[in-house]
Amino acid sequence: MASCASCNKMILFGGVEEQGLRFCNARCLREGQVALAARQMSSYDRTRLVQSVYRGPCPRCKETGSIDLHQSHFVQSFILITRWGTNELICCRRCALKRQGGDVLQSFLLGWWGIPFGILMTPIQLLRNGYAMLFPPNTTEPSEAFQRVVVERFLRQAIENQAQPTATGGRRWNE
Ligand SMILES: [Zn+2]
Ligand SMILES: [Zn+2]
Image (cartoon, rainbow, N blue to C red; front, side, top):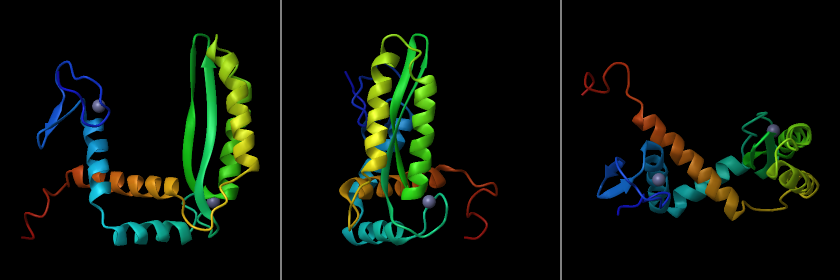
């Protein structure tokens, strides 16, 4: 039985095939391409990209400041359905606090109303967010996690742009 080269799930039928690898859908194919491109990226390009984001303006508020990878934890419930997770944010401390504060408020208001996970996860997510707000990543240079997220986002964007068909039919007329 074939399994997806990106998420490892079994592919019962259908799926996408590329370069001898099978993927469940276009999304997994793209994630696979991102992982492959990240492995092939030279350390020079990688460092240059990471440093430009690290030293650059905040992608959210455009102000220059200490850019880092912040985490914001959330939980939302609706009776039997509870959804929780963590957003990875590349931004300055001030933007991170704004988002974390928003998630604390939202989780506090909307997290509890699910049985049983809402009741279990809400205090956990609130504590995790409190911790993330009080103790931001304290790095003098880009952390491994920061580098991974920056590179992945950059490649995902590049691959998505490549996949967009151009309105004029590509470069045919210029060649
Ligand atoms: Zn998959
Ligand atoms: Zn900012």
